[in-house]
Amino acid sequence: MPTTSRIWTTVDFEQDGRQSDYLRLPFSSDISAYGWLPIPLLCIRNGSGPTILLTAGNHGDEYEGQIALIRLAQEIAPSDVNGRIIILPALNYPAVAAGRRVSPIDEGNLNRLFPGRSDGSPTEMLAHYIDDVLFPMADVVIDLHSGGRSLDYLPLALARPGLTAPNQRAVRELLAAFGAPVSVLTDGDGGGGSTTLYAAAEKRGIPALTTELGGGATLSPRGLKVAEDGVRRVLKHYGVVTKLEVNASTGSRLMRSLGRTSAIYSPENGLFEPLVNVGDKVEEGQAAGNIYFYDNPLREPLRLRFPASGVVSCRRFPTLTARGDCLYNLMSDLNDS
Ligand code: CA
Image (cartoon, protein in one colour):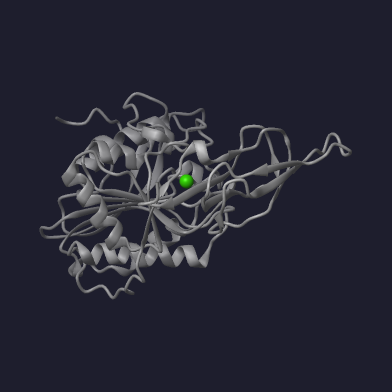
């Protein structure tokens, strides 16, 4: 069935070679009645083989994936490809250009809008195009995220478990091929649930992984290396770029997210003093941090404690904190109860 999307491009996905254009997202404004928003799009194709869809900048203030994919797009020669690599390194382009998590055009959080709407806001239209046009072409999906402005993250890969037994095996294969130091299975509880890009890929039965590679809206060299090494290993593993030189994975610790019941959310407005770091192993009841009250200096600081034992996957980055902000998420080894 032809797509109902109004987004278009000059890239011919069936043509061999390296093509660079944009997803042209129609956006009519006071100063550009018939214009479009330019979402950078690269297609590197040669003959037959699997299609790998690589995206970054889904959240605009997350940088390791954006740089990893720009470098990859410049490096890979079409003649070395067996199949097709579709690369969108600045996926929510208006958010990337503004250095923000969400689009300033419509305040759209792309990774909370799947499966999108063909007649929706610009960000909803983009989600719909990815789900309706790009996913049906893709055999593997990788969406590179980091913590962004509000979180610091241990570099890791994340995947939803897969809806069928073959999907579950395909997801495990993808996580092993990517080979991040830590691989986390999650159902999105405490995050975007079923509204994310990789959740939409799971629904279509496509093995998909996402990452968290650092945070604080800056570039983590360690996270950038995890992204680049992982994507290169995946391209080689699936036979799409067999000539690629890759660094062997040092192994991936398989873990699971403990979800929102084991997270800590700030119970009050205040100043957050963290007492542990991402990657730390913590015990139930251990002191996690303090909240100081900027509007009541003589009030006793609030001591926060971990509600469960686990390993800290992420921690809030800004000190200024409001009731409801996520301060910590935990994970544990997959086979721990
Ligand atoms: Ca993100």
